[in-house]
Amino acid sequence: MARNFNAAADKLGLDEGLREVLRRPDREVTVAIPVVMDNGKLEVFTGYRVQHNFSRGPCKGGIRYAPDVNLDEVRALSAWMTWKCAVVDVPFGGGKGGVICDPRKLSQGELERITRRYTSGILDILGPDRDVPAPDVNTNEQTMAWLMDTYSMHVRRTTTAVVTGKPIALGGSRGRREATGRGVMFVCREALKKLGMRPENTRVVVQGSGNVGGIGAELMHREGYKIVSISDMYGAIHNEKGLDIPAVMAHLKKNGKLAGFPGAKELTSAAALELPCEVLVPAATENQITSQNAERIQAKLIIEGANGPTTDAADKILEKKGVIVVPDILANAGGVTVSYFEWVQDRMGYFWTEEHVNTSLEQIMVKAFADVDAVANKYKCSMRIAAYILAIDRVSSVYKLRGVFA
Image (cartoon, rainbow, N blue to C red; front, side, top):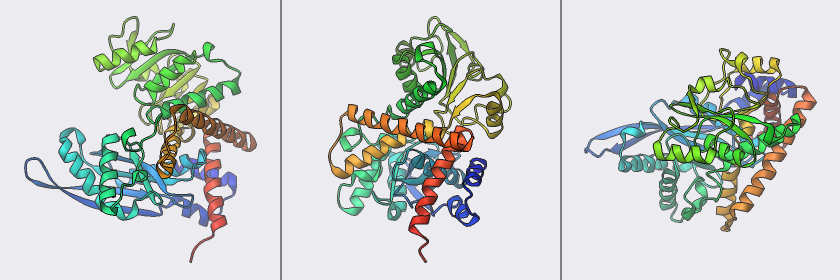
């Protein structure tokens, strides 16, 4: 991300002082989280919340629970959120949070107590106009419900807009679960138009089968794309004639893994990335396309459903090969866009139909793709650098307009 930031800032001619402002988080909080465990013992966990930038509006970003959470990771992810929000032009800055714990070893009651004490620890910097968390790795709708309830109890009023990704009964938005995968589909469609390609003539390899990869594959299958491979944490399945994705997802739900799906060959997730296809959608984890395999990637177009699936070294190789990469901060921004819609609905107390959510998401994603493409053409650069140019320009312009309070 630092290389992309610097390349974009150079194109914009950004002065060093403003660069330094945009590199640094506006605020960081570290809290101790004492919790009485089910066995009666007291344990102390560590939690973080980093607010990278709130010049354009409240901070926005998920909270993750994992044993390897650390402050540097949370800082980087909060900056990522700033640029992602700016690319789709929603009025949020970037934030991110995390708690060092292993949810697999914790009961539901222990997770609830950790969440509530963590929320109490960062309460002073939360709020619909300050910082609006969301689910992330190992957190979900229930986690957000606990967070919202804890905040509401402290401020003595029900405040649904303090988090997004909540259950619909507590002010969640229709279409939120499918939003990231749907956004991936929209930007893929726009990129195909740019290349003069049609969905029915397009073979797609999808890495990942969760809310991004699985839902994205289902939606693309519905639009006529030929999904020739999809993977999960155990491996990938492949059929060069195309997979029946609804049947694949039903098999996954029933068996807990893709392996064993009738009529498909099994291979590793790494091998699937190198299959013949027009479109590759890495929608699993980071650093999947590297200098080690980039030369063997056969796709003409890569849509980054995951955060950071392509390394800097791989980026250079792909660019030299003429592969178009639609970067993560654009391609997977459907999730934060519908989170914004949820926040808007909570604040006005009026909730949209799923059709309205999806139509509004399409409008924003199509415009964001066109904006990034226009910047790429103007500066003769990759779409990744163009996305950073667009985002940094939007945030830095706000700083210039507001000035520096002294």
